[in-house]
Image 1 (cartoon, rainbow over the protein chains, first blue to last red):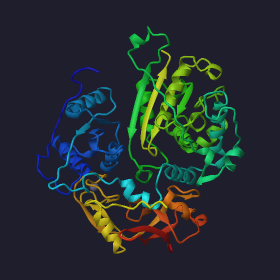
Image 2: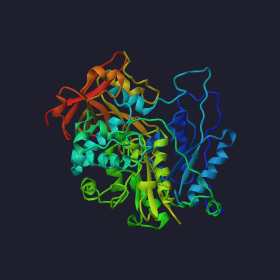
Image 3: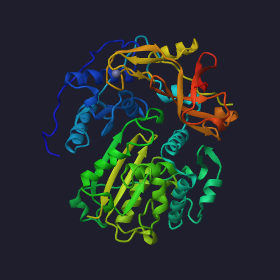
Image 4: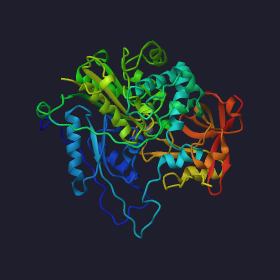
Length: 382
Length: 134
Ligand SMILES: [Zn+2]
């Protein structure tokens, strides 16, 4: 990044007061967003980046994206106490310099009550208020509704979904670290496993495990002098659009697309240039929609695609060679990182029996929420 | 026995739940761009405008997608399986999460015409949807 690439074009304040009345932090952030964009002569439609502070909820940033109707190439939450405001501007400048976004709001707000009133301090989450009363708890039902809608729009068989689970299980059977190592399954096994949320069966859903995953990132210069082969980050992309599936801009074409497109554009490579796909797989349907939206097959054809390709470690298009989270195990937040560590392991030639031969580039994709938070990487060997 | 999660209305959302107590479905309407908005917001997510007013809507819609929960999605729903969680698309445009009632879960399909029906849980009245004639 070079200095001077980014500049501040507008600002707004809500003046200090002893009592902020009936508003909430999210309410104040919403109004501040409007005021700040207006000051710069812009509307919310022009905004594609957002940096906020810790709003007291783990999904505060993505819910604010959803509330404002943003489609954001860059979203961050900064928690640096009194340095937060300045740090936000730095983050935004980096995001703009790298092209992740072009117009980024950096927002801070705090409420105050005299005398203290409990209820308005914390925003009630839209999920708690408008979904959980109807049984809308946890991620299963959202992905089930995505699968149902996808099957309605494009046609997809239970057997095609099951194939994803079967091929990844075959990969896990050459990974002694996988939770389901040594336990191959068939399409029949998947379809005979208990129905959880129609149309998803037990073996189409990740099993929670405990574990960890991490990577060290340094300069290419320094990496060249370290023991293992450097794995350059050739391209990155992000896209955040919604928290709940109910409010997704499109239920069957996900924000995987803009995220993956940006990563491939930045890397200057095409889909045929990657030899390994390491794609987030909380459910079978997630993999199928991601394959389409990441550009590996046209919309509506993922079911046929997994029938026509061998997605195992020694197949024509290796996918989730560690077994994926479906068969390796989903260790909470480390589950997504396992797709990164497996790609690095493969690119460094350290994956043993399951190492993909002649591998030069890998596509890594992480998916959060109910397909509303996306991040993509193109990793290489040089 | 685990309690069913129930809404805790905020100053923003109180008009919705007040209307529900009277068995009426009210959602916000943007005076700038004309879109109906659900769930309640501070700004219109379509145009960014800040002139949102509450309006009564028809309560009619269609099933956009759904799932039949064969295992409970929350412990409080253990004695309700199988039950239908759905996204209903209102005639006025917005989508909302709800339960489809008054029909065998096997008979629910995408596109099914539905109308709002009310479930009294005490202080809060929830909005479910049931089949209606086309
Ligand atoms: Zn509007």
